Amino acid sequence: MEITSTDITTDNKTNIGLSNMNQYSFNVISLFLIILVLLLVIFFNDREFIYIQQYLNNLHKNSKILKDQFKSLVNPNYNKIVMSDKMILLENFLDDEYFNFLQSQFNNKSFNSLNYYYRKGNGVNFTNLHKSSEYNGFLELYYSDQMQNTLTNVLEKNIQRPPLSDINSCSLLIYSNQGDYIDWHKDYSNYYGDRYVVLLSLTNSNLKKQCCSENEFMFMEQNNSIGKLKLKPNCLLIFKGSEILHKSTSIGLGEQRILLSMTFCDICQEKKNIGYNIYESIKNTILYE
Image (cartoon, rainbow, N blue to C red; front, side, top):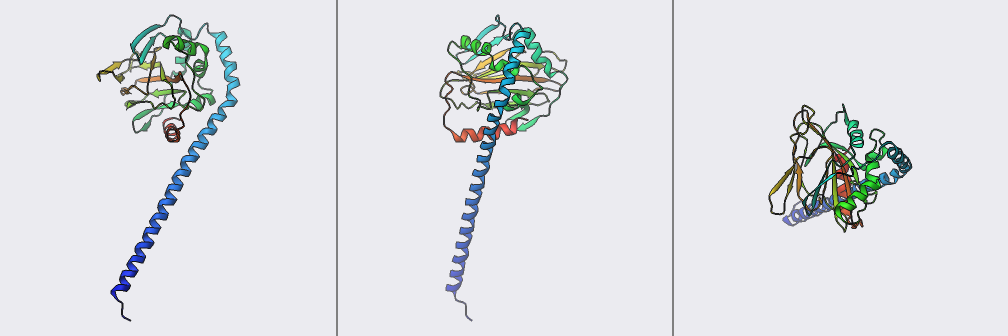
């Protein structure tokens, strides 16, 4: 049987057609699986926020206990330093007794560090803070009227807490191993109003357990120069993280730096952004315990 060049050409076209069809099918299936995984991440993440509800009654009861135990959470005589129209520092922010109560919960504790592409460290996210019996008084501070009223007075406008669906509402940021850091970044805002990052420095100690570690909080100023700040314990830094490029340099051997990170806003109406929700779900699954 004689095979002509026409037959070979036809076979080649058929093979190419089948190959293209297989590649197309593979791409469609891959895309479907990626979308399915992302939707599952969002679904289970959303369930976590509903799960928080069961802890709210006990949280309220414990807030009343702490209110009776401590004369005040916030020190009414804190020192306010206006660093720019987007950044304010409050020194000696908490009442000494309450601050020592919070800080003492990290005594003699060690933590493993997770290495994310722009951050090395550890943390306890908003959901796990509700679940944990290990940390007492942190969420109570975040939910307190004293905290909200102080920010309202400092920023001279009504300040609100974001919805419970914001995983960044309140969390512990833990840098406890040599080289722990977070690189230059901005904190994306999913709100129509101003979003404020509020960092309470809990520990910032060197090898001798004194202040401070090698770490520096660095930020880009309006004239494109780089500002530097040592966040001493019991200092509260308030800034627009979505507008200011900032980083936190690494700590040295035997050093520790722990912060309570909180989010507040003036208009807490969320933008409809599924991409942001997917990104935050994946990021926080990686970053936190």
